Amino acid sequence: MGANEAKKGVFLGLSAYILWGLLPLYWDLLDQVPAEQVLAHRIFWSCFFVGFIVCINKNWRMVGNIFKSRRNLAITLLAAVVISANWFTYIWGVQANRVVEASMGYYINPLVAVMLGVLVLKEKLSTTKKISVAIATLGVLVMTFSYGQFPWVALVLAFTFAFYGLIKKTIPVDPIPGLFLETAILAPIVLAYLTFHEVQGTGALGDAPLHLILLLMGAGVATSTPLLLFSMAARKVKLSTVGFMQYISPTLSLYLGVFIFNEPFTSIHLFTFGCIWIALALYTWDSVKTYRESRNMKAEAVSSTSNYD
Image 1 (cartoon, helix red, strand yellow):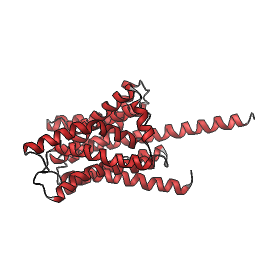
Image 2 (cartoon, rainbow, N blue to C red):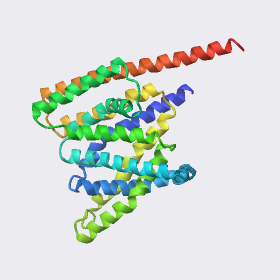
Image 3 (cartoon, rainbow, N blue to C red):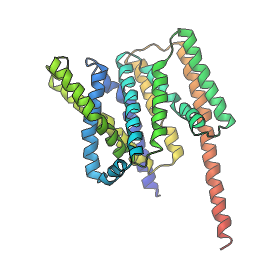
Image 4 (cartoon, rainbow, N blue to C red):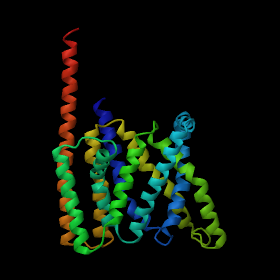
């Protein structure tokens, strides 16, 4: 891969994570709409927008292959439910002024993914990763006992997104066609839900101003654009680079929570986030070291093989 392609990949990846990090600003514009209705609009309009992208990219064969297997359809339905729970929790968290806690969820997500890998896939955990998980757990426990409030928003976001990633590994489909299938499966349900509320006079579209209607429709674009950019970037940059970039979005969300939404950030928050940041530094260092060792071993294997030719 050329240097220009790598630079393009980094730019696309940065754009994706910056957009993800700025999403609280978008959901805050919809704070007058109940979170469950925002979620329904997000799913419905995402289906339309992502379907349009699938048409442009001519990914219908990949979509069709999923329908040939009941197992893949069942897994896709499960993925749709899990990511919907993640989306709803995030939207609700923004509306409930818990953006700081939501950012914590995406900081600890890689560590939760490691735990799921151990529990579900029976993966081996290095000593460094065990220490990183323990340090992050300490931070969460200190916050829980200090405030007497379980940080469920952070943990639901972390576990649902990690579980979603685990599910997606079992389906042979790219992110964009996959998201189309997930939203398409739920689209009839959310359409019926939205129609019911509009008929009852409790829907968001009834007497809504034009800008609010456009914001609800734009939820599909806001959801799909960063994913599209990320899927393009993932093919052009190293896995280790993606690993570093993934911390951009929770950092931006944390900044927004503290400085834009004026949420509290006490010494307990600082201790908790400090534990998480130390844990992530250890986790990232260990992951990069393992990746480089694996790459060097492959290079040595190729070199020794060529010597016998």
